[in-house]
Image (cartoon, rainbow, N blue to C red; front, top):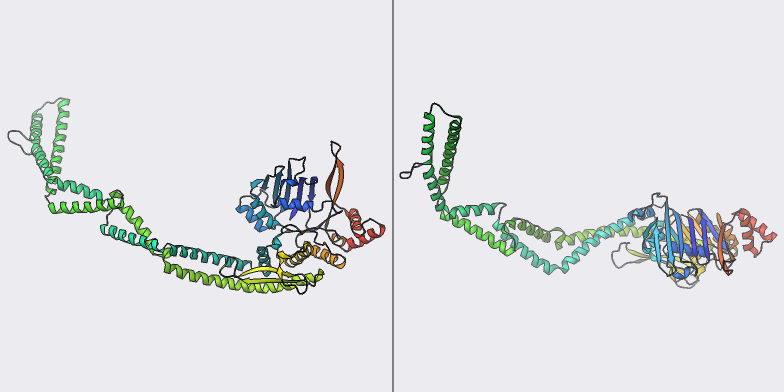
Length: 561
């Protein structure tokens, strides 16, 4: 609920601070004193439209701040968390609006700058203003649907309808997209099928290319490799002509050193090195012999390898990738082909899924329609009963459910409050009711009936009692008090019988002051009335003056509550 409102430099208000309570609060004062100024300022704090005309000529800006208790408002808490605007103390929310003299506007929520739309979105969840002249939420069909759904207790079913609709729409959108792309997808699918089959046939394995290239080099140079091996063996192992082999020379050197009975340390080290060299040369000869025995002249295998390499390089050039990347490309093309051929991209599969999703939506939406129809009948009867109490017996209220042409996020029907304000007149949408007073009383009747289930904690009525008096005004007061028992109601009123029902009474006064330049100026002030002041104000409202009789009457009215 609204707990505090601060106004600075707004119209004819210099500075105004007001603490508000739960229950029913009335704002009264002389005609022209500026009773609606507080509500106008609150409208701006909630994201309403503004212009530079609200800023006094001698001031640079208007500033308005509203503090709202949100401890019981889970939806508002969730919205603040989703938008990362929650305060350190989650029990309160601070809305602030500044309008400069040049018409610029800025807004904050809990000290963080926000867009005007964000301020308006949150504000609409916290306070509902019913004015004779300003746009109000009760004129919007979305509000009618929300009120009926809350009144009928079908919030869970509404969520089920939304979820099944969103799933149906997701599948339907994908199906439409695929149908529009059908020719293009078919052509792409055919190309991918050919490419996958071609790469499947090639079946290039990881590391195979490097192995083939090495084998091709060896097969292509087999004679040179054999000749090189033979030359190495002759140098190391087999004497050629008059020249001894390396192993023979090493053996001779070791014999010479072995025949020496006395050896210096250097010769001993030389002997060790020669022995090691002989072993190394012998092992080298073994490797060369192994090389020679493993090599064969195989022109058929060479042709196979070269043909395989040619096929690999040709396909690589076709796809414009390095040959070693063909296995990765193969996997990528195979995956894309699978996606186009199955599941979410298969028209037949999607059509079956769409049918299942639509059946689920229809089941959820039809059940919601039953709940709404039952709720609409009860709501219609209850509101009409309250209208009779408000001396609007000639008026007729109907909660109208009109079938939609197709699936919708909000169910099978469109919901609108229809009203006839005079006997014999046709029902018309609530927003087309001409009289501001009638609209305010209609709003009051609807709010009283839906108060137990309404999610908005604060409801504001601007002159709901205009054009009425006597018993009707007393009934309005009773209904407002009843509404205040379930939340917070703020009401601007001219009726004593309405003011007497309030839990809190605010009085607006207009005074003439002189500024530093000795110029006369009009300023509006607001005060919370105590018990005696309240008696005086209600007495003034009864008779226009504070006589002994009017005070006595006022005491009786206030005591009755």
